[in-house]
Length: 187
Image (cartoon, rainbow, N blue to C red; front, side, top):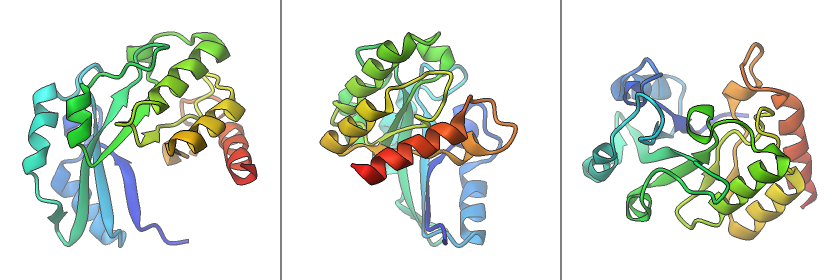
């Protein structure tokens, strides 16, 4: 299998990545990617971009270094209502939006029911395209419900390479990713 696009990348603007936009584009070109999505963390993630950053990305060129570029955000699911930390209007201006649960923003696990409710409600937001790393076992999900909702709303479920690498900090990701893929195949 040849990768053609990476849809979940961060630059130094997210506060915890180490590469610039130009360095990311150079690596993408070296890997032979056709497209790259820059999805910086939204404002509630400590050290990340201010909302003004996301207002401004509409001026960025969508082709750089011979690569198609999508600009968006990895927004933070904040609560069981599926609230995210960028306004609907800004979400509508993004090329791509990933919604994820992150400990600094969501806090402790709300149990399988509360976590599932949060993700389901986020998927009902028409500004959300993808649910990021739903395989993270620190926040258990009812995968049957998640896959059914993803199908009904047209929301993609990410299998995050960083989640399944050996020594990663997320829990039970390989097993959870397998469950998600099996349910997606079935449904």
